[in-house]
Length: 174
Image (cartoon, rainbow, N blue to C red; front, side, top):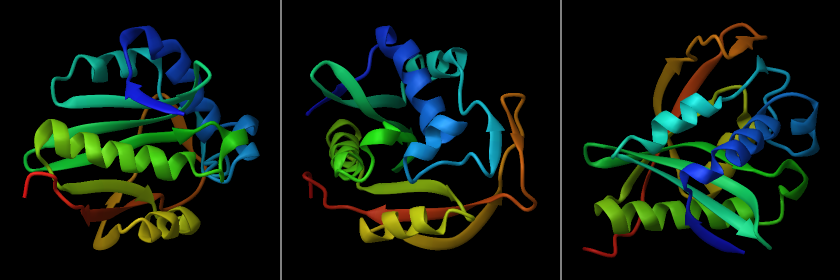
């Protein structure tokens, strides 16, 4: 498995990976599906294109044998990095790819922006996912924010919210 920064040429593949990892029947092959919480798309190509044009964004990928197997978006905000759009091919989840991808993203954020604080938003209904991040050193901040509305998706449950998690990771610059 190799890690690299995504390019514009990866947009179509990444859009497909993100949508099949989060939504619809294909997402049920993994353990991170949101199919019971949300319908529709997670993101479209236009949304990814905007992220590529943001100078404070990195889209990182893992690939095996030329096939993209995981991705994560890192967005610099002041003195922290916000991680999102974290996806692993559903049929490959549970094999350590996500753990390695997250570690690479933390390292790249630290190297690129000299940042050692990470923030992420996780749906509160996804207790097993929050526990996964807690095993990786993330802690709940106690802050909860509403889940956003979008033309891309429909919320299928009441009271969908994000829990905010944070982590201080070792800086290579301290």
